[in-house]
Length: 133
Image (tube, rainbow, N blue to C red; front, side, top):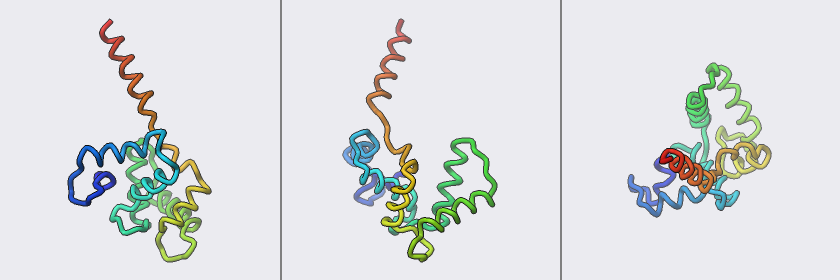
């Protein structure tokens, strides 16, 4: 995830890069920005394409973080199904244009790509007020 914010590819992020990355996730981020950002999440090695291994790794991690259990066989089936649909040029990878078409067909892929920071901040302020009373 760190590399998503490291625009200069130097192994460090500055405050501007951090804010720039977060701004994509707020309600003001455009659909195109969210698609590009989410593609970069899957493209671990930053080679401009998503491999079956990258998709499988991301799926394993996401399922584990959400306490969802799937067998390796089930995950393999999801990855294979995704590639059967998305890899339209049959090169064994999902490039950005193929990914974009997949997102167009399945917009829920981006469902977790928007954070309402105002709501988060407002709820934290409210919680702090209640703690002080």
